[in-house]
Image: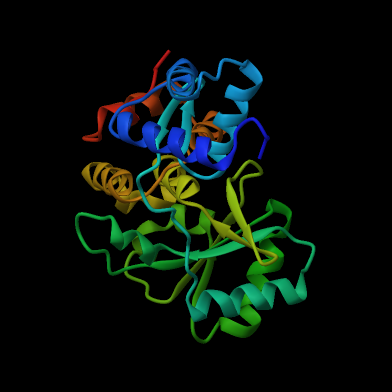
Length: 259
């Protein structure tokens, strides 16, 4: 921490930011005003340091350029179950250099309007590795699971609509926002949100259900807007996506500029 922003100064500035801007957005000039009024801090470099400290300590979040919100929500961390962990370990053991993640759509029931019974395990990997992963899974899991690719499912929705114990292997987008922990990669809430909006694979989560999922995520968890929007820019019409977010029943501070 820079010497000109000691712990006492940082704590007081942090508390004032939380108190004043708990329910609304603010910018660099607002943080400057607090720093100047509290400790007569005017240096641009010091203000940048303060903003960096607030961001790194998860006090504030930048949702657009020079538009911040106070972080008041939980940080989402995907918790894999035994089945996903076993699959992950097997793939990692056989193909340690391949990029992939494993997750289960049953986590969406935390956010849905209607409880979805037909959930499935998703394995996302590099396009060139999809057939390798499918064949590997069939060697060990064919008796327990139905193992198909995303393309097969999308072209045969009715055939697999009521299939239990389903594993779907799909391409992992190169720009996917992932979480790295203990040499393992996990899906993030931002990736889940955007993929539900874009991919035909998740057709049961469209319409009002998708709106409810988004609204419940916004209600409970902290969203990394810069990560979400950056990913959206690669995968969909960003203007339409921002319109969708702005149409939701969410606090005004989360609304985005559509231009």
